[in-house]
Image (cartoon, rainbow, N blue to C red; front, side):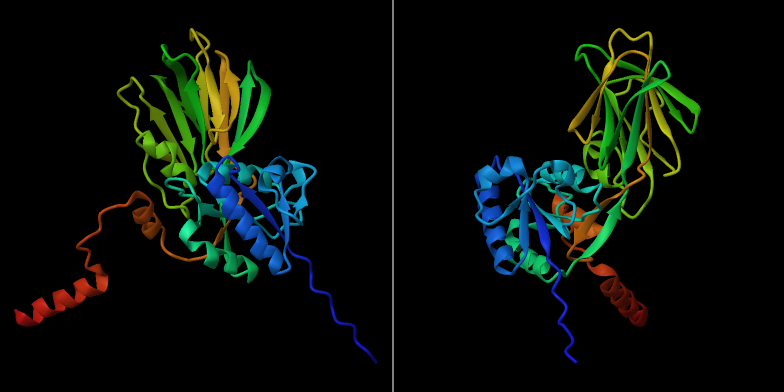
Length: 316
């Protein structure tokens, strides 16, 4: 009796690049060549395919289904490109692996210098996947829901008129907290704590911590400190109905909604996370030091310090 050999399942990788940069196009072309040489199908977005000009690649007909059936999305660019990719892959649950060609690149897993080993890991499927918390955002006007949104990093309510403050009332868990005149408010996830929230004076929160951050931007108030709330909390911002001008909601700095006076923005933990591929299990502290180039010269480490203390004890 002959037993048929099971066919090797087809593998598809979604490749997303910042095609506005020639460097990203060159890197994406090289990556595609290696992946296809390993028998992996490479899928491209329709609006990027012409710029990349990669022969033999599969081109999506719709961005909505771009990640469907892909085992991973390899993203060539900076954090902005990764955030764009997150919007395309979140529904399908496809993990993202970013190669940083930008500046800080906190969301990226690898740098351009690591490109060869990164592609090797994708070919070997040698990576772990972690889930990052998101936020769901609901905007209502006069009690009627007008729009829904979501964000991986942050939802930001900002003033629409540069010359005027944004008058808001903030609320946590259905209870009013304070009234502020401010430039805006950042409501961030732990992943977003190193982005806009950090620039606005918020704390750095380790990714495995589940929490929601509320960080006022230039608030004219005595009580206007950054706050960390439970992931089960609902954070709300109401644009005062007596304001001379409204505001603008930004989700991850990409998707916008106008907020006329009287608008209400409610932010909760997202129902669906974003999945990120990880090649290394290095502590977040190491990533923080590397990305921000923090000074750690002179660090002796826990083990070295213990040995030093033991020697001092013996000498005494």
